[in-house]
Each structure stands twice: as structure tokens, then as C-alpha cells.
Image (cartoon, rainbow, N blue to C red; front, side, top):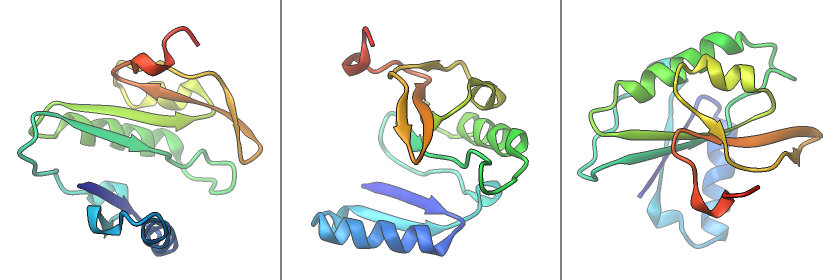
Amino acid sequence: TIWAADQHEGALSATRTNATRAAVDSRIETHHYPLAQLPKLSTSDESILVLTNPPYGERLGADLATLYRQLGAWVTQQARPTDLALVAPEEKWVRATGLPMEHCSPAIDHGGLSVRLYSSRPFAMFAGW
């Protein structure tokens, strides 16, 4: 099961629409939470992978350092081993999580910004990029 959360209902609506279109809607749960209110994940799996495309601040003007620190703190508070992978345009935001992370993809264009995928556990499929 994929557990999806966002603070914006529009993003969750798009997730549900895309999941239905891809015929995977029965495997995705959507939840309306801001990051600061995310609950601990309860799972019987041995580990968890959190994949996120957090805000970059280009259009939000948000306090990104706080947001990324909250993300790192939430990951470390999980009951199970939790790996984090995230998309970001600047390494400084990745470092703000406080987690040991490294880029594991080449820079790609994403909505007019150059971004990379960073991960706390390198993915073999990106080795050598």
C-alpha cells in the first residue's frame, strides 16, 4: 500500500485522479496532513521508504529550513527503519533534514528548475550517473 499525504487538498485530488487513471487507486491511501502533523507510520514491514517532492520555495516563500528539519525529524521518529528519498534543487535543503543523504540521479529539468533525487540509501539503478 502507498500512503500519500499532503497539506493541500488539490494535490490529493490530483493523486486520486491519477491513481484511478492508472488503475492503482485500490493500492493508495490519501491523507490530508501538514508535515508538522503527520502521524507515525504503523506498518508490519521491516522498513519504510518515504519518497517526497517537498516544496522548493520558488512560489511558496515558505521557511524551507524549518520544513526540511521537520521532515528529517519525522523520519527519525518512525518505529521502523525509514529511508528517505527526495527531489530538491539545492543541496542545502537536503542537508537541513539532518539526515545522511547523497544525490543518486543526474540533474533533471522539473518545472523549469534543475533538480536531483537525493536518498539516504543510494539506489543501484542510478549507480554511475
